[in-house]
Image 1 (tube, one colour):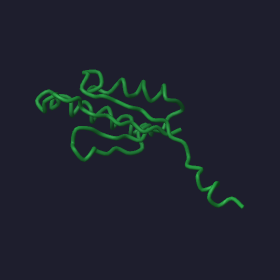
Image 2 (cartoon, helix red, strand yellow):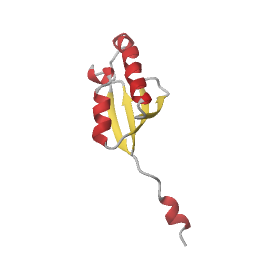
Image 3 (cartoon, rainbow, N blue to C red):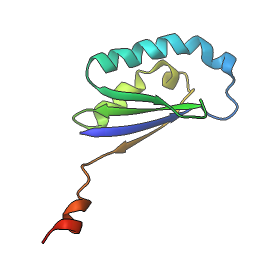
Image 4 (tube, rainbow, N blue to C red):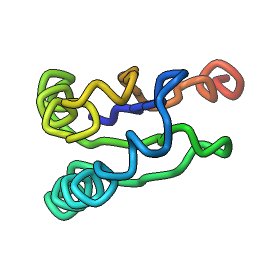
Length: 96
């Protein structure tokens, strides 16, 4: 199953607070990517957050992996996880 994670840095958090966490955060994200849990990673255009597409058996597994992220542990990310499912709207449009 796939899950969309939207993670944003809370208002008021400075770049100086974030900088020490970037390398450990990237290393942990790479670990999940190499384990085939993270499928894609993107910055949000305003540079105050990221979007990950996760692949996992359950939302609990994704939440456990997210809890391991150093920036999440430090309280530097507000995270929303959205379960996804295949789009089935074409059936309604093209069914005879």
